[in-house]
Length: 220
Length: 214
Image (cartoon, rainbow over all chains, first blue to last red; front, side, top):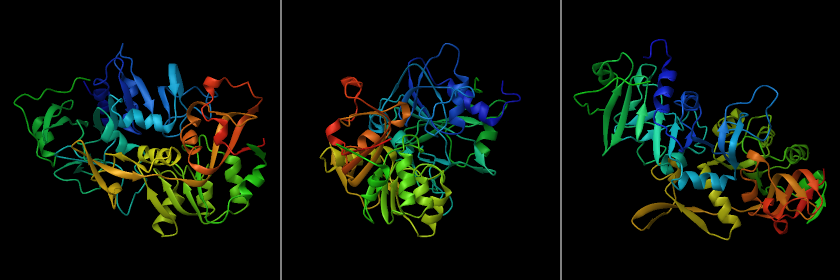
């Protein structure tokens, strides 16, 4: 598996396997959005857009967009049968109150304890945190979708040099090289990417990884 | 409730006012009001809004016209002009997590001094904020936000001022409609009393001061 797939596709496909029937799921911008494209057959989940929609569907065909039916990036979407809309207080009540089963977000850095930094690069890029801090603090399960390294530098680090998004550790990071879980302040290597060796993952990860005897390859 | 022209609704705003404007990436923003604010050059504003959209849309146009002195928002990433003015020291920006922002506005409209949340703890968003322990958990105290004016966008308004919203254009609008001294609503359709079912009215007429005539 994995031959000919881009890193983004590997990541999105692997994360899609974490979703099961009936879950309320919030997907961030970028790689996380692609997770919806790879839901396993027979799995139906509710996608939330934090601007006020549950039941977010794929973008509409050309000419069928509605100016007041958009996702959290402001792009036109459709609403699936049974969709509902609400205001921002309800939307973040769902998020902060632990009603969102899984949130998938992009990341700039994740440290060895699972702390995520994903909202600013001081002096360079200050877009604002939007809903990210609430999502990481409040969702039941937090999964980070990101490439393993940026410009050859590991994004999974001893300590984040960038400002954190939350003190709440994320549950899992999925990259094109590895699935890493964070439990009890430890980063544990659960799976390796298609055709990737454990040694390659360890050599390309700055944070210390706990490595079990058997690390299976990802199933996509 | 009174009806008002868009011109007169904006003429009410004094220099340096604190203004809330509804919308999420300009979806659900009363664009006619924003355009009129630009035309009348209403300046030195403190603007409370979810985001600053893009330079050509929604409240992004107020930023480009340099009418905003202080901005309280959760996201400015798609408006390069907001970031430019912030880095140049021309615009004071208070970035607030989105869920915290809406709750601070809700508190302001619901008679609460603030709310307690764990969002932002241990991040730059907790700077200078009081921490309060409740049942063994630490929370940040986030204080209420209130404005002199709220400009909201609705799908339907009836002749009394009852408001209903459409799809994702609801966002911050009903919450802001509770949190200002003077509440001005623009609606896509203004309809006779009775057209809107009581169950579909989201903002009750008594909180709406003005409906902008279409």
